[in-house]
Amino acid sequence: RARSPLFHFLSPSSLRERPLPECRLAAAGLGGALSPAGYGEARVRLMLGGAVLGGAVGLTATTELAALLAVIGGWRALPWAVKRRSCRRAEAMECDLSEMLDVVALGMRSGMSFDRSLDLYTGYFRTQLADAFRSAQRQWACGLASRPEALREVADSYASPLLARVIENIVRSLRFGATMADNLEDAAREARSGYKARRQEAVAKAPVKMMVPTGVLILPAMLMLVLGPVLLELAGGF
Image (cartoon, rainbow, N blue to C red; front, side, top):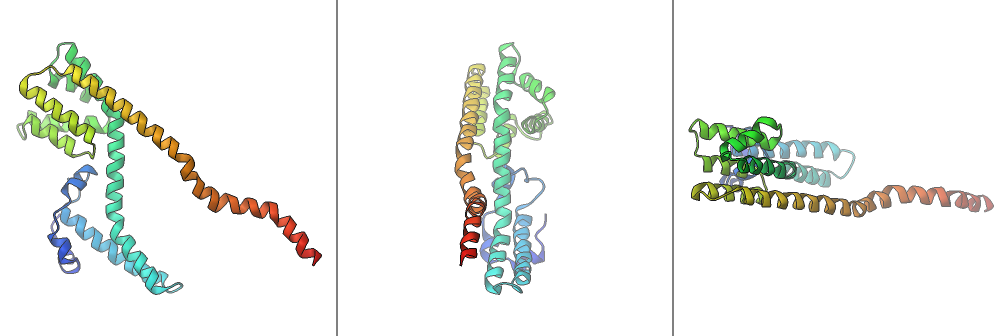
C-alpha cells in the first residue's frame, strides 16, 4: 500500500498530484485491498508491460503503432477493469436490494426495531449486500463508527444512486423517529421496477449487438457458401 520508488520516478507529476480515486476503488470493492498509490503504480506497471509487448509485436508489424496501442491499452486497462467491476457490483446489489428492503419492512411492521429487522436479513441471507450490512452492524455495535456513518459507508461502497437515497432516508427516519416501513416498501417497489426496466433494456439491445458478429463472421461465410460454386463454374468456363 506504500508508494514505491517505481511509482515516484516513472509516473507523471500530474498523476502523483491528482486526487486519489478512493471513491472508485470503494465502489469496486477494492477499498481495503488496493490503495490509491497502488492503483497508480499498477497503471504504470501495466503501461511498461504494454510497451514491452508492443515492441515484441512490432517485430512482425508496425513498431510505432503496436507500441502506441500497447501503451494506451496498458494505461487504460486498470481504470476500465475497476469501472467494470463497480458496475457489476452495483447490478448485483440492486438485484438483492428489493429483497432486503422487504425483509426489513416486514420485521418493522411486526413490531421489531430497525436493528433487529436488519438482523433478520443479515442472519438468514448470504449475499454481498447482506455481508456489507453485517459488517456495518459490527462497526456500530463495537463503537468503531456511529450508525449513520456505517450505513453511509455501505452506500459509498456501491456506485448506486438508488442505494444512496435509501440509506439517506433510513438515516433521516432514524434520526427524527419517523415510521419507516411504508418508505422501505415504496423503495423496494422502485428497486424492483428499476431492475426489471434495466433487464428489459439489456434484452432489447441484444439484437443490435448481434449485428456486428453477424455481419463480420456469419454473413461472409454465407456469401462464400452461396456464391462460391457460381464463381467456380464461371472460372472453369473461362
